[in-house]
Image 1 (tube, rainbow, N blue to C red):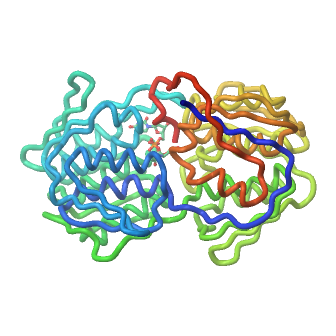
Image 2: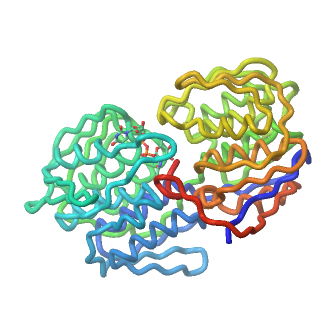
Length: 436
Ligand code: UD1
């Protein structure tokens, strides 16, 4: 039995949305529990399919997981396994995050090599070269990355060609248990990387330069679980997605539990497009402020405009008066949503890495297929503003990264329902675990 979302567009929305904990923060934090045996507690964790996949992987390695009320507890005292099987890696590329911690703690790891992916090639060469710099020996066998560091890892200088988020996280986790000092140049500065660094510090790690592109890590012999529960930071991509609503339909919304400091660029660009956005502590109010203006934007690593909001802002720009240009600089195939938006009546041309959106267009409801996580969110936004009914298939992507999206939108007044139908599952080349 498969599911689809049925959305009747055109209804105005108002009310509050509580922002969930960040998917991209909880995944590395869970991987970090492998660095030291013991009990870890997390609050504000999002109920998402990717989180379940990571917990399944930790369980496979021997960890015990328990939910006590609002607290997620992971006990890694009994971890003995060192293998991340293909079945889990194909579901979620972020499974690669266990590689650094496993090899740092046990001196070896066997992790399935992630395959191709609907949004681009997404190689893991930075992760592997970085681990080699730390003294690991890496071989590829039967689709698995075998990593060994019989004498343990030792500190080194690592220079990334590009500030990769998960590669920075993987190497930071490996370096905290390496002998001596590691420097990472051109490191990612995303809030999720900083959050992981703070968790590692709470475990006894010595890390300097968090939030900059130059990290200095002084390795320790051992770490221990943080003494207090860790509250997962709010999901800036989820928040940014909902912030677009007033540009698409008459809407006045308040995000609760958001972190505006993590959303500076998206908020600035949305204001430029004509939205009225006010920040009051951890609440962000947004409403339309007249006619929507077109934008010219390019995705970039943090603090630039996030690639994970590119598809959503494209839906919004179909409503803007004039020509908008979006250049995607991170993932070469991350324009799959364009084809579906066109089926809803959007006027979008793609030239290599740049999409040109001509607006305003009144989108029409249609049957569409979500091809990756953020494309799914783009289609939900488009459907809410469209005339008539839209059916969105491929919900396995949406469920990976948006907690309770239908419920949150319904509470604002949206007509949105999940329905079931008989049909074969159709997973892309890297399974439902791709795309963000
Ligand atoms: C993370 C996020 C994802 C987001 C992306 C970019 C998680 C779990 N996922 O993914 O939601 O879209 O950052 O903000 O946090 N690259 C290489 N070799 C490597 C690694 C990366 O060439 O070894 C390239 C990638 O192909 C891409 C760029 O570097 O072009 C950035 O990717 P990266 O930051 O690594 O993305 P992820 O960490 O996979």
